[in-house]
Image (cartoon, rainbow, N blue to C red; front, side):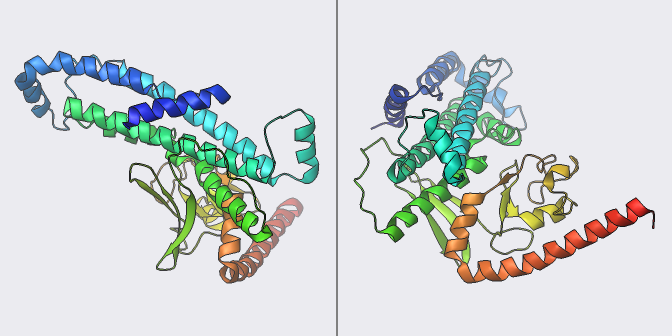
Length: 338
């Protein structure tokens, strides 16, 4: 089955359950077909115009680049990422909430299935939604570049990454993958036997925590042989992330390492970081204030690396106490004028 048909069937099935945004794959393909017909008769002139541009961009008169294709795709990407982030955050907050808060949520009339199996399926549905839209965006941009013999599609992808609306950059995707593994492991530990959920147009069979030469990765296989590997090694301390935090650029660090990079104490926290401070990896500015604490990932790593986690916890506890002591000593001296 061609991806376009598979994507349309998947989105149609999801829209019957809930109204959710998606990529207008068919509509964008029609735009590209029209653009292709416009340029085919003058193939030689088109190639010459391409070659005259150092960065191999599209010709200046291309109507697609002038405001049809990219603005349409950008709006759809914003809608997809916004819907995904909002719903993933709600699900994870419910899962990590206290029993009282969960009761309040159910009392308010949320009719969706919220038992163990229901949470697993809902998390998997959200990951499916994120990944199939990521594949759709990748394919339509690849098609754009093929038709135009350009790199505008790749340039657009780089730009949306800087704008932080690339769905694979979302910290909630990483959290959902960890959430999915955690629930499955809890199910195995409890020995519960549950019925398999009804089949869906799945993009992936599941997520896993893998180790390569001692380094942990969150892995996920997509349907078109594309593999996602999220590196869980902090690039600052060069160890497995502890108390992980995801900056808005998508890079993951230990919380204390991120505080050190932002030149703030753990008492003040990342919200007080200067907007001029950069991510140590991508050098993007303003990435600290919207950082997300990855609690599900923290639970997963604590289960999988027990000895390391306990040793690191003791070390960090001593460091945090020392920082807190220095902070309050400084505050007291400032207040008393000593």
